[in-house]
Image (cartoon, rainbow, N blue to C red; front, side, top):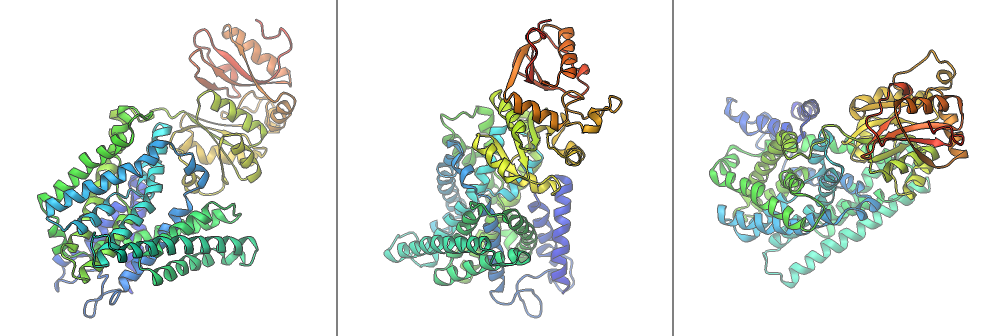
Length: 613
């Protein structure tokens, strides 16, 4: 009982530590696992571990091969949750560079790491390539925490994020295929039996994944499952799909759950967010337990296998040679510049799938008596620890050194996706600004997406992590609350100011504030008389955004005064000669016009000749 409770306590503690230090949770989880596992044998009187995952005598949590089963089931849930994040519309819009990173770069990493492992550790080719298939995986559970606290240029952040999401199932499937070759007893000879086995894995995994995915969607849409049971029913369906697929074709279950997750994630389910949140919470718990268990399951002898210069050489080759080679070959003729390519080359932390699948396959191959299989788990853990440690600690200084770090994030997060919000977001997009819309109204979000805008369904009363999970928001520097609700607008200011509104957080004034000149909120947006009702009315009458030249500071003041008394004019931004945009706050008199060539961006229409001087 103590060991089971300690896994959860240590796991949650590691997650809290990681969140506080802004590092991937994998790092403290593995260190805790090593501390309560192999390292604890150095201080206990009987040489036993504090936590013994596999049954040994009278000690241990999982007798026989039950640890394998737990690892398999845990990884299946984690991969399902990862598959749910692969939205079809977003994946199809991913640029060529990402597609090349998950194809060309994977091939380079696979053969490069396999060759290096073969010659450095004198491993058989099949074992070396199984190891290689595991160390090509950079998962979103590792990259996500790094990017969340690292404001990068928009395109660069998107490349890293989508590479991590897409490559996760690709790496897992690749490892499954190589494992199947080894366990078939035919190695890499590509016999008919081996090819048939591979066909079973892919065919059964794809078909059952689709069947269970569409089946789950059918049950939910037809309201056949009570709302309070949807999350538990989904979990049961995932485990059922995994076990049935795995029963008929060993290791095909992982393919099935990834495909099932992709099917569910690309259907317009009203319960999608609830299911994703539940699976994310469950995945966090499983990741925490899994990493501690897997690290604790290693022995001192396993660690001594990689306590040598060969292991360090393999890590350095993967980090400094193979990863950059894959990135530079994949990014030829792309829009990325040299510094951006160097940064992507540096960021390649390995994650949960690499560690989980390596432990599963490594332990199985050791029990099968495959020569060299004992190196798989400790070597993968060494690569995971090394890359997470290097990337987690150095990502920010390297980004600053290469000049890809956004000292002043310029993205604009707009809360509320009404017609006027969509009009403003379109203008921002047309003028080169990264604008994202969020709204709890699905219809508004759908309309925004049909206009080509980046828009996401989100509730500002949800946890901030729920919102950042859906999209890359690291380069948001401004927040504009444009909803019809005064309470929601104020909640946005209170909740989003620190994480997203570093450069400025603004909200529409309330009707009461707009009618009382004595009440002047510092975060007020546009002129002091512009509440939501007036904004919507002007947009309905004049559904376009206009620009007019600003001749001087006094000219600007004059136009602002006109806007205060004319209900058909709402000033929005100041646009500089270079094209930079500055949001106009309700204290609009505080804006200084810098240099000539600036323009006033406004909604509505000035009376003829009124803005001349």
